[in-house]
Structure formats: C-alpha cells, structure tokens
Image (tube, rainbow, N blue to C red; front, side, top):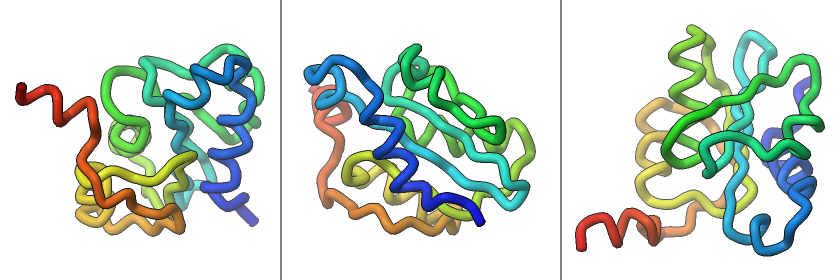
Length: 123
C-alpha cells in the first residue's frame, strides 16, 4: 500500500537541515495510479538532503512555482495519473483550486489564504 502522501511530505520535509529554510519551504508528494510518487519543493528543486531520502518509486519535480503545482505538472509531463497529494503545510487558495480542478484527493488542510508571494506579485 502507498504511504499517505501528507505523512511522506512531512517526513521528507523534516530532512531539511536548516530550521529557517525548513520553515520557509513547502514539500509536496503526489501519489499516482502507476505507484510512482512525485516529490517537489517550493524551491526550484529539492534540497540535497531531501533528494538523498527519496525511495526507488519517488521522482523529483523541478522548476518554478509552488510545490503542489510542480508535482501536478510533472505528472502531466510523465503521463501519470494523480490520485492523492500531501503537503508539509496548509495549501493556499491557488493550489486548492488546481487540486480540486484536477480531482485530486488530499487530507492536507487548506489555508484559506492566497500565497503571500502571489499577493506581492500584483503590487
């Protein structure tokens, strides 16, 4: 059975060495029907200590954007079928909308807020 993606996201996120970095970043894990999990960060790529913690069936999503957006985009590129997403912190409104639009299940709470970074993009 697949590990719950929220628990896995929190576990991988805890591998980030520096507390400041850990508190500022987000880690997302997207499980798929194909039994491949996609792991992404709010940074352009996973930190080395997190990459070192990936299992055989886990692949990294890289590039710009929120962790949730990144793993969903990687699934589309790889032609994988998402089933459930888990995130290391509550999900912002933009990512909530994307997750619901794609009909992906989650047990992670929604923040009910717009991303602070995105609020500042319009200033």
